Amino acid sequence: MINWDDARFFLALARRGSLRRAGLELGVDQATVGRRVGLFEQQLGAKLFIRTPRHYRLSPLGETLLPQAQAMEQAALAMDRAASLGELEGEICIATTDTLAQGFVLPAFSLLRQRHPGIRLKLLTAVSVSDIPNQEADLAIRSLRPEQGDLVVKRLATIKMGLYASPDYLARRGTPRSGQALQQHDLLLFPRELVARHWLSLCGEPLHEPNVVLQSNAQLVLMGAARQGLGIALLSTFLAEEDRGLVRLLPDQHDPIDIWMVLHPDVQKTGRMRALVAALEEVFQRHQETQPPALPATPAQTHTD
Image 1 (cartoon, rainbow, N blue to C red):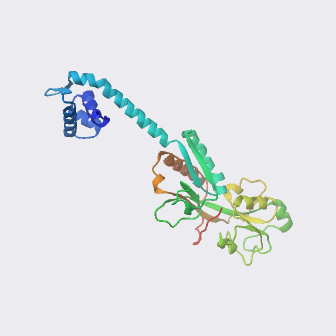
Image 2: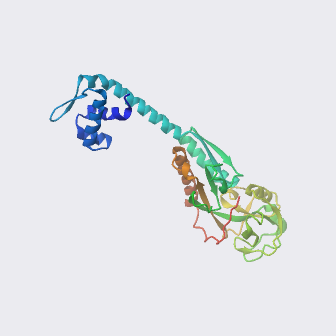
Image 3: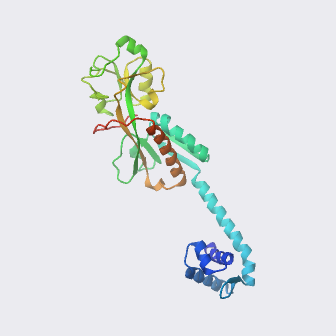
């Protein structure tokens, strides 16, 4: 049975007329072309070319087989196109936080859909980086750098977190000043077991037995609570700055948070994953270019959802 790997050498030589030019087309040396065509002729039991000192001309059998070889080439190209399209179709599962999804992942997915409308997205906000090795998600975007050595890890950006409260809260409780403790204020924080350092210091303001009136592991909940006038919250500036119901406190002070992209090496080289990563990097880079340099991060950065 004739296969395409044999036929492509025959077709290249028929098209180019010399071993050297056929080898250039195929990316091999001319001796390889001559050997493969000779083996093909042996398999068929007949000559495909009439050899002259300067040229290879098709034999009668070669002329008969040429249309079939060209049809095989078109079929192979069609298969390649279908395979490439398949790589740029299908579902990708991302594990991230609600705020990172809103601020970065959804804008990146919008770009991706414009370029490759066959790609679908599944967003999970309850799956952690630790689930990537088990492939419960294809990619994670978090502010916690994983320790597993078998994962592909890249820092996407450094974002800033600042202190915010509602005008109503500030009218009732006053506006905190730099250097003055936040002890007399109601605070809205992530649970201590998730982000212990925020219970010791917020944007450089030291805390001692802070009056935490509400805890949540979801930043959008903390933002909503701050908007309701329940207290002061540490929020991502890329979201909170767009909220007209919040006022930035101590605007010269912030906490920097590194954002990490984590993916399993088995999915790193697929077409749709490469396209997604490119879109994510583009969106995060836009944000980074609009921000002033971040202050040095504290040694013990932990994740913030």
